[in-house]
Image (cartoon, rainbow, N blue to C red; front, top):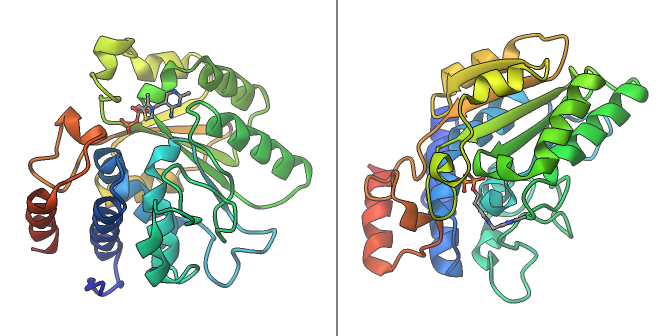
Length: 271
Ligand SMILES: Cc1ncc(C[n+]2csc(CCOP(=O)(O)OP(=O)(O)O)c2C)c(N)n1
């Protein structure tokens, strides 16, 4: 049923993630396809390349941990876990359906490989800080990663977490901001201005980098950099990336594709 690319490179992993998540969203009659497409390269680099996380070690204490703070993009993480063979790919067919464990906002309940349930924006980043501090106190080698939406930064709890991260010099923590400049119904700058974002976060003492967040090479190189405090990566992305009519078109935050839109999108992703 799932005709996919050979899973032998980050770029193919990313292509497969877009195809799988499009199918999940379409068949589940769910939302947030543009939010998912925005961060596909970020999720791909983390799971395919950077994190010490695999089918072999995902239950071990030494694994790296990923907490999706923008929980509405959960389909991308479920699909990544399926590509890593941690969950059966066929099970993705139940996504967002009654009785399924694969809810629209990411959930760890009965889903192996998911660290924490999120969806209430502004919560995952603080949780990631706590996990990183605990890991440091326990002298564990695990690295902790969290992915936050830019609109999510409207939540004050995110800024409290940034203060906490630098106070404890959590250099085992990387915070990636999916900077696509959109939130649910407007741009971030029209809703609650964030710019100059880099300077704001720098002023908290954190090590801030800016990359093209849809470029796997730039993400890989940036993730490798060593820092003495928490690393924050502002990943400039395109909301809806990969499907021409969804890119930077805010209606795709919530809209579910109809059959014609689904077929058009799939055609673009397969070619
Ligand atoms: C506390 C809270 N308020 C509102 C929502 C509803 N909501 C879901 S996604 C979203 C917009 C998020 O925008 P952003 O963080 O920029 O993520 P994007 O989808 O653009 O990647 C909102 C308001 C929520 N999930 N949690």
